[in-house]
Length: 116
Image (cartoon, rainbow, N blue to C red; front, top):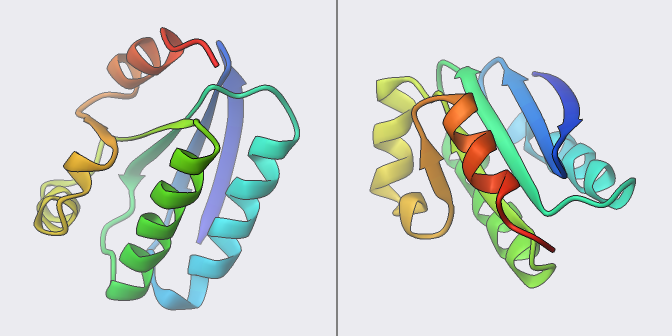
């Protein structure tokens, strides 16, 4: 699993590439948590365009991330998921816990509007 990031308008944009499985979930979680402690971030936007598949272990990590960021009052969004991944995220009602966007541009614009 590859993870790239950048900071834009107080939003940490994280781009994932590869299958999000239990094998990678702890590392991804740790890296995202480290990123949000390095600067002032009002939100995290996770670009899923290069994530072809997600397992229950990956879903568990996402749910944990939702809970942790909510407690820290940091908004969380996901964008550019494939139809398959989007369906999986909807099945676990992630769209009720985090914002979902079809494009990174829309997600960034929406999340950048929040002041921490």
